[in-house]
Image (cartoon, rainbow, N blue to C red; front, side, top):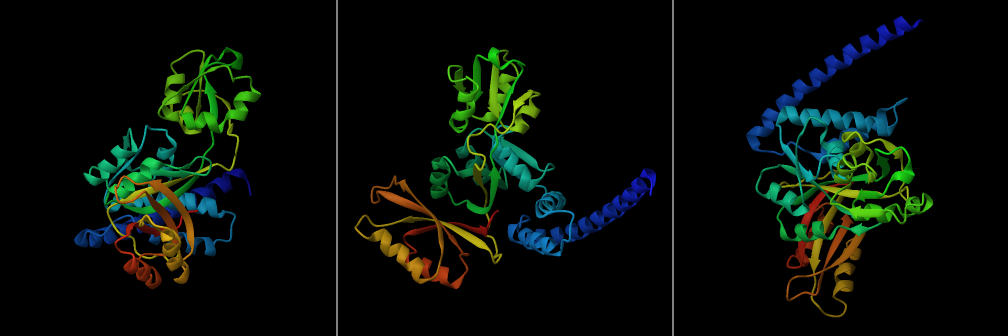
Length: 352
């Protein structure tokens, strides 16, 4: 078979894919009409997880699971925009890691609203200027994002999904010779995550200038001769900043967990995680007694993090993740016993 015939076969397959996608979107529009009558949420993470799991089991290759997920997450995002276009706020600016996380879940077609702080992101959802928002909650190296946890404690907004994203840094500059670089822009955390690179390339004595985001770093370096940025690949491309080195982080398994927040409760997916805040009495054994009830209910805790409390009555509160959904019977029993101590932050399908 020659190249021309192979290309004709590809064209024929593409025509069929287009026809099937349009058929799918017609059904999606009918679903959206039914949802609009009941004000049901358009974004259903547990339903998307169910579809992805089914397709991965049916798959016989050569597509791998990651490829299937990438393709269908974009299809889901397009479908949501056809059903009911809704705005997504995120911790900006454009090109930030949070922006990347938001696009990975909501696709390129969504209406995005970049915000300058995590507080502003929460306010955008609370004021209904955005239906959804994406914020970081923890990093595998640097730990939890305290501002996010504090705001979850103060707000009625819920966690409806989580996104895990590998964090890779690039070194980008207008200069072709690294010896001509006199200053480097980046977020303060990124400097700490790339210490070995800076040392190995003799950049310890170069001026390190912390800015609010790695995207801002790329923007500044794109306008400043003799400078460079430690930033994401997408930020460098966005500001036409040539990349000198890729993957310069000290630990290549570095990941950030992002959460999607909104104003609705998820249905059970069968593979859920629940997040809570627990404010316990300031007395010996209070935490042990509280956690023992989870153990007796056969609930697996996956994370516990203490935070200083701003309430006079409590010294600390505890952020806890565990396997299960708020509507599970064993979870209901624990919540009922400790209803005055627990603030439910959301139940949602586990991320990868």
